[in-house]
Amino acid sequence: MATPTAIVAGNWKMNGVQASIEELKSLQKLLEIKPKACCDILICPPFTLLTGFAAVSGEMIAIGAQDCHTATSGAHTGDISAGMIADAGAGYVIVGHSERRSNHGETSDLVASKATAAQSADLKAIICVGESEAERDAGKTLSVVLDQLTNSIPETATAQNTVIAYEPVWAIGTGRTPTPQDVADVHAAIRASLQDRFGKDGAGVPILYGGSVKPSNALELMAVENVDGALVGGASLKATDFDGIIDAYRK
Ligand code: PEP
Image (tube, rainbow, N blue to C red; front, side, top):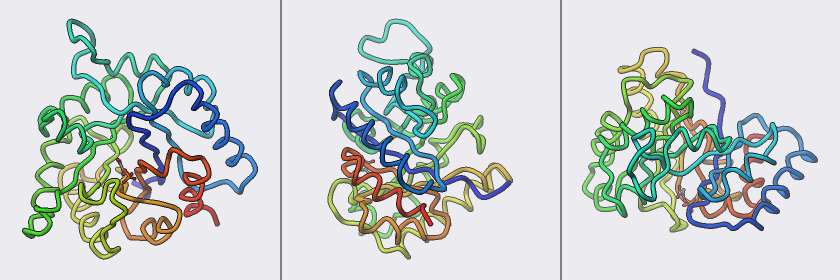
């Protein structure tokens, strides 16, 4: 299995209204005029913007959602199925983001079921894992991350339908990042675990780093071994900032 193609993914969280499509168009313009980057580019807006974004995103930008339900349809008020997300024109869905794990009590078992639902709908599941600050301080980073990883990835995972995002919870939206060596250690452990469980496929699953990635630190973080791209929150909302991160994949 070849080295995974890198992905620079933007998670817009609960930000954006119809007019925000102008930001997507600004990003498209930047991608058109600047040298081609050797990575896939993905924007994950709120559900309300999926259809509109997918309609204009074109070949250069993929569109994803930020969560899905485990069921295909039914009595689940307020929820959205993976099939609906695919129907809206998206190709990816984030599952198990730490904000969903903490704000909605999502367990790794539930995350695995959501990833299965995503894969069944032909979406790529971006499965998020990451330790809290207390867990890092207690020296439990690897055990927490590997436990989440094992229990959040379904048996159906392949290099084609699964992406992992390592996002230390304490680095999300804080401006703080782990050292490149810390990132390297966790990504190496994730890669080893994926290969143990999925063999050659495990070598092909992209492993993104997420947590306060911005134009000024992207090059250093993206150069770390086994880092196959970034999951970006705050800095994905402005086309120029997001494009500055994509610069890490331009020659
Ligand atoms: C995220 O929420 O996935 C994230 C990485 O956020 P930020 O880049 O703002 O830290």
